Length: 360
Image (cartoon, rainbow, N blue to C red; front, side, top):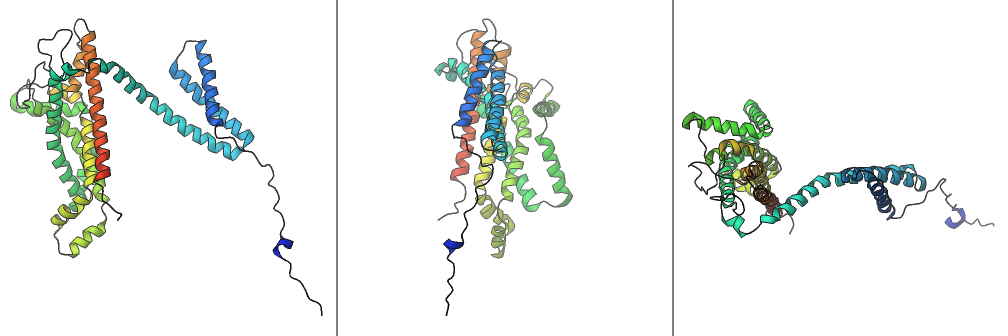
């Protein structure tokens, strides 16, 4: 009686053939070294010609991308080379986009710190012809106008967004959405002309008031608040609304007690970013506020100074000698950048700390 033995897997297994045309792999430092070599070549080339830093950066990006693609194609193959090409293009686009931002911040900080002292924050320009003086009146004017703009825009914008999300239907909703989209794209100078024309109807063509600037900035801020709040309210799950309705809670109370608390982080972030959007506007305030060298804290009485208009006039009408006024203009620009960056940081903090907690 013969017994048959079943072959074991080790007897029947066949070694997999090596893939044909197998390529190697570039070390991790190779792309960076390639771009560094391209930068050295481009800098040497520019050194023997009229040096231009912007052209040197562009040449480095182009030459480095081509070199990385060719090197990867010869070592790793065409598929990996295409992947590295796209990676280089995306990274280069980001780097090029950062160049003007870094240059702007570097220039403003370098020139603005010259007058970043106590006198700049504590005095105005009354009686100042050359050296000295500050922007206390402009800083206070900016804070007051921004506060008034927020008080006007936030209630209108939030209520409009709630109507569009919770109540709006049909033609009226489509009309409001259309006009909000149109207002989002209007030039800022148009908002200033609107506010000037509105107040000129009642007070005459020569009127200049702080409240006029707040109304002009509100025209720019309201559509931003509406758009951001509308998108945030749409993110609230309908299950929360339906659960509230199932308990017999009326709709208005559901909005107040459920919808708004759930979306409070997004609403706060949107409002803060909208304030940052209008705090540096200059054109509407040039028309509605003008400029003054004294301190006026009453927005319903005469002209007021704001940081954007202050910087504009210090740069365009510096007087003699001009350097002192130009230094004040750069410091005012630096304060505006700090203010906008601070508002963006506040928006991030609101989004982080007031977001609904989903974990236990």
